[in-house]
Image 1 (cartoon, rainbow, N blue to C red):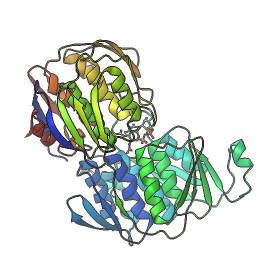
Image 2 (image 1 turned 90 degrees about the vertical axis):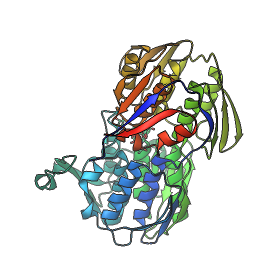
Image 3 (image 1 turned 90 degrees about the horizontal axis):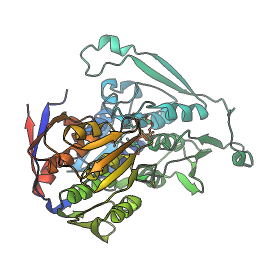
Length: 454
Ligand code: EPU
């Protein structure tokens, strides 16, 4: 089990200085999983040193991959001799990104047994869209009791059921779109995703990459993680065309090349530090930032009255901004405002003038952090699991709170930075899953935040 640690924050300091943004955690998973598609070595740079990435590396290593560190954030990974029977079930249960083992391993080995992934409990339909997509690809899916769980009482997360996937030759597709029926290429296959889902899009891409026939993916998500994976798969020899209407056409190959890739910086971490600067009325220069996936986020901050200057594609300076006024924050699939930035914006709303409607139609668990903000003195009324109204400005007071999930945890740190007195955040393993030593970077900017080991 991870060590029990907490953050203690004394609020009130304005942030000032420079911060460097790290690699994107959610882009690291599909890129690491792309290395499972080839026997050749792959080099990945700019890996964020966060818990979920370490766990993913451990999973891949336990399957037999050879991994060597070439630098602080640079690895060489060779998956010539991997055995999917060696997947460590207990680690899969720790992170949602582990669902991305499915596409490449199933494509390479024809069958796979894997437990459901873990990660943030922010939604009710964890992998429905993946199961639906693979059933459209003629994959047979069964859920069976796990044989392993009986022998593994010491495991941190008990595994009672596993999914068994098997590729079949069955060509009959139950549903075709009208445009697909016009296709001359009879060997092509079509997958219509049941919702915009980042990881389902990635899983189908990873699966299709080793299949020489054409696969058409409709309702594909185009967020940063997907675009990273597309560029890596192209380097490996996969042909991927982007078509109108959120469609990707993929033509894979039986043998793929290794790749050399520098991960993009994290747009979510970029947004988190921008809000940290705004909320403390600080002045922070963000370097190595990822701004290209934040168009709407930045446009809306500008509308709210935030002062910042974009210096180039990867550099932004945020200035002290008073009297911000937000009307509505709505998270939507890309290019909408990321649901992963909604909690940070929710904390900002407690400091702005008048009411702010928060609407997160994506995940029903994503507003739970607002309960904690109310305990700190915020004035928030819930209108259901997806909507709430935040009345500002309010004075927040430090209390002891758990970190319910990764992004909520980051949001509560921001709340602590402006709260009166001491805020104690427990269960910070959730935050370490996705932010690399966030407290050290905040300390460098002048925040009073300490990590305490119990
Ligand atoms: N769901 C969860 N927990 C999650 C994500 C999803 O329970 O962490 C459930 C929800 O019920 C949702 C369903 O799964 O309705 C399907 O969600 P979707 O497939 O859209 O999510 P995802 O693609 O698996 C990725 C990110 C999430 C991010 C969403 C939306 C990765 C590994 N995860 O999830 O990131 O919120 O897209 O942009 O890329 C995070 O980093 O904190 C995070 C949750």
